[in-house]
Image (cartoon, rainbow, N blue to C red; front, side):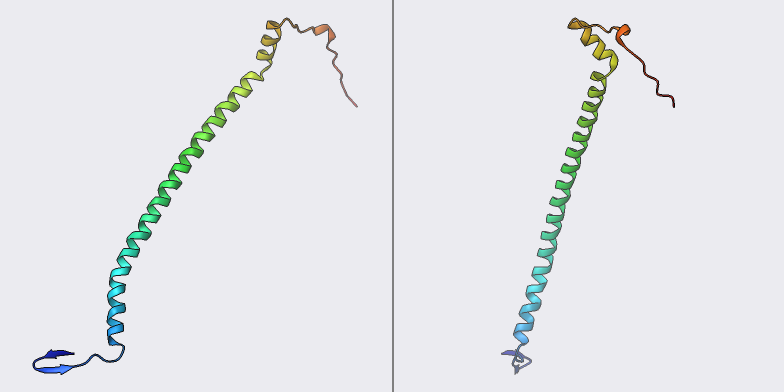
Length: 100
């Protein structure tokens, strides 16, 4: 019961509930907004960290691929063969032409 200018009046059935819901919404909406923005920020940080990891791994893969190409070159293979005492005998090489 409230009094205004000497007159008393009562809340209508459900009016307190409506005021309570509005009050809770006025509190819950900003809190949920901050919470969702914090989750979004955390997710963005994780995405950036994963992008950095991917970029680092791609650079490492490229570097390793270049090392493989260097080690698989004919010059490197012949150099290693000479180091262990093997030699390349051109007389044993036969060229086959398949001209039809």
